[in-house]
Image (cartoon, rainbow, N blue to C red; front, side, top):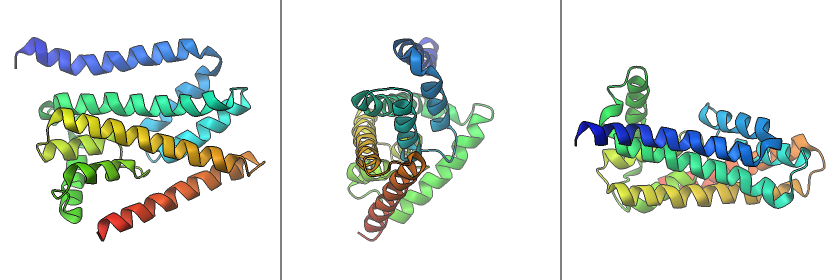
Length: 214
């Protein structure tokens, strides 16, 4: 691969995400603090979609956002973030270990990924297993880890990207739907968020246990 193509693969996902942020915030300028804060939180552990989506939905509604928009905005943000993160990992996997600081982080994630592959025997029904892995709403089961597992297993890049897309969309819609339903039963915002996160985590735990003992 020539240097120009390599540079393009490295820079393109980053510039695409920055462009997405700029366009998204300009379109929903009224909620830029909520959008920006939640996008940042999604990158920082231990926050994951199981907590970011319910919190963002409540904050948007409290700020006057409509019911449909308050569901679609968080889902869109999560899915686009997952897609661009996956694209960056998939296109630049062989370079990541050599990037200062980031390389150390990637190596630790690779160690976790290798343990996961051995523990769950993921080579069997690999694409379905990766879909379930990313669908489960837990910290550490996002697009970055899923991309690394896929690359370690030498999966086809396009198929891996599609699995991450469908899993991200399904998972985000699932979390948003559960959060939306529970919010109807709780007048207290705090208890509504807490109930949504608790139910989602419990369901995720059940799926993970069933998959492990399958």
